[in-house]
Length: 234
Image 1 (tube, helix red, strand yellow):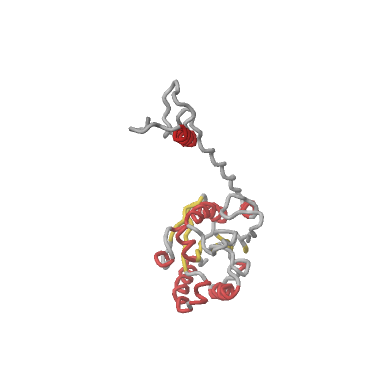
Image 2 (spheres, helix red, strand yellow):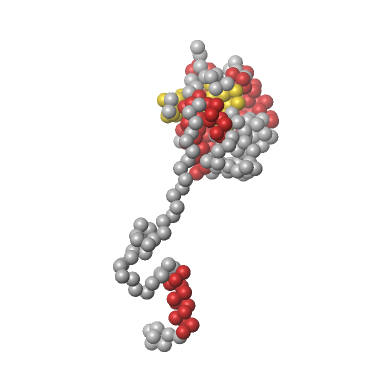
């Protein structure tokens, strides 16, 4: 019976099928089972995620790992990757969010502006160490927060291996991922990033790509670069 109505055979089959699909495999068992407890006897646990690769302990090994690992967001055999460039022993590390749409790190019109910024502080691309937060250019051009968090873990290891005297971060994505604040709240003051090599002094400033469209912001970047020059004085 179903209430005051007699249960039909088709209704009974439908009800039993629903319970079977919900995971009930017996009408009466010898032992009680907590079906909502994933650790209960007979319950199927989700498979554990594989442990991440051990991160290499040298800059050279780490650079090679970044170009091959599947432990980073958007990793695939078809996704091109861009390696860090420059001199790891230069004392100045610069990090941008991802490779440029034109290819390479900080390229095109923004790349020309970046080169002039470096020249203004007596540097060139061969006398800095330039690295991407993500070696893969994300198809949307934007790194999601959850992906940025994973990339930040990896970047801290990278920064610790290089152990620069100072680190310059370009843009909101790098700023939020590594010092917890976008450019507007982070620039014009020093931060420290904790790494395996100890705290690294860090500045956050406006990315060159934004300066191409908003040249009025150059004065703010120049203020940050002056702070950087003062820190890097012999």
